[in-house]
Image 1 (cartoon, rainbow, N blue to C red):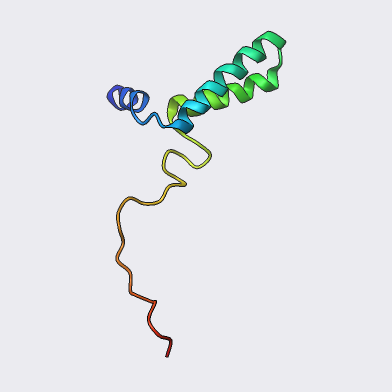
Image 2: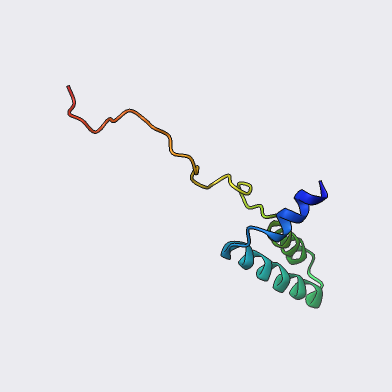
Length: 79
């Protein structure tokens, strides 16, 4: 469990994850400075998504599958 958490925290840092981290930190600082609870909740959401590598659909929910699936060729003439 700890190894998978460490692996998840240290790998897979793509640009969208860095943007979520930066926005989460910036909004958290802003929320503390203005004592705004709603902005703080949104900041924690973004920060959590960056740390856990999740998004609106999960870590690979919206991505294209990596394996190629062979399908029947349907580009031929219609009969």
